Length: 258
Length: 185
Image 1 (cartoon, rainbow over the protein chains, first blue to last red):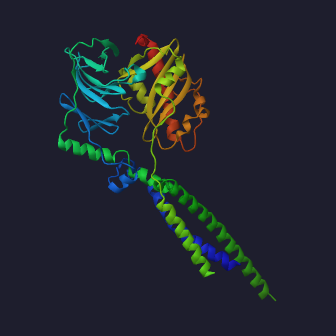
Image 2 (image 1 turned 90 degrees about the vertical axis):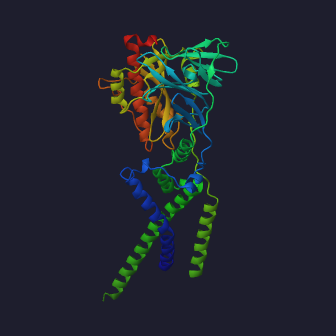
Image 3 (image 1 turned 30 degrees about the vertical axis):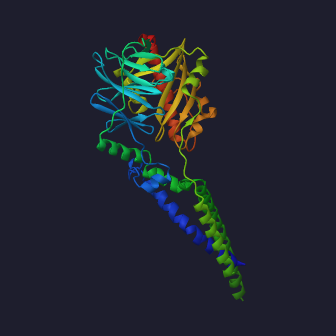
């Protein structure tokens, strides 16, 4: 009886060994994650990015705004090679604005679901969504002859006054210079494509998913559950074997006594 | 016995291989519980007031830093006001991603806190009223802390802390909007 338990205990031990080493190593790395700067290290391995469903970057949509190039790749917005923010909308245009001090030179970035105004230092002045008064159904952005920011649907135009923060309906017959997509410098496009693909997937994220089994989706979670059950069985079978040996040792000792 | 063990080992290997072959890819997605527009309609009814604006002055920026530990990232904020009621849509990062939150201040206390969009991979339990209802009636004390204890959620510590900071921020912004006629927008 005891030898059968011992055999199962050994089998469970061998089966669980891989999981124990794996969970211990990933757990140790996660415990020292901040010291190893794992949250800040991006994953660049193509196969791993593919596994997470992070595909190569789609072609950027870019607009020139004075000396700046504002681009969108996927849901990420960039000004030149710097990340601006995520958006669920589509980049419609980017316009340089020149206002009186203290506002001075500004950059307006317009998407179908947001208007972002940045100052000359790249500091966000404000972000306006539909809840904040941004008109619905925007398809384009541009400037009027006075240099004011104009947003438009196919049938209606709005002028945005940065000083007051108000939208007013504009005369649709007034000529507007609309933002038009422009080709991006090839080197900058390559930089953005590389950065876009690696963004968001850190080594810490991968380790967390490995440790919890989520890297393999539901299958991984099932595997980790099985490993946990194996460890429970290992503990119980170990106690059972130990208890049986203790009893047999006591029995032998009692037999030897006169 | 040994034959039985070999058989068991083969079954285990087969099971593991099968599971690995059918492995699914991990999924990542934003969870939109309530759109900002729906939050405002829920707060004010069909007649949502026009947004008011609040400039982040140097004094306010210092106070924001004390609460958030960083700048807000914008120099002008929009909020919605009807009588003593002000509504704020604010964002704060829990661990990696911003949590979009709708907060309503009535007078000088919080009326409600609602998670609108949650983007983190875990900690989403903060969306439940069982947690957010703790903020109802909370105000700021002299040190700009909430005047009550907010119980955390195991496994959602960073999200809880983010929402607590946002609650303090909304109360601070409401105070500033109320003072010096800022609410004129």
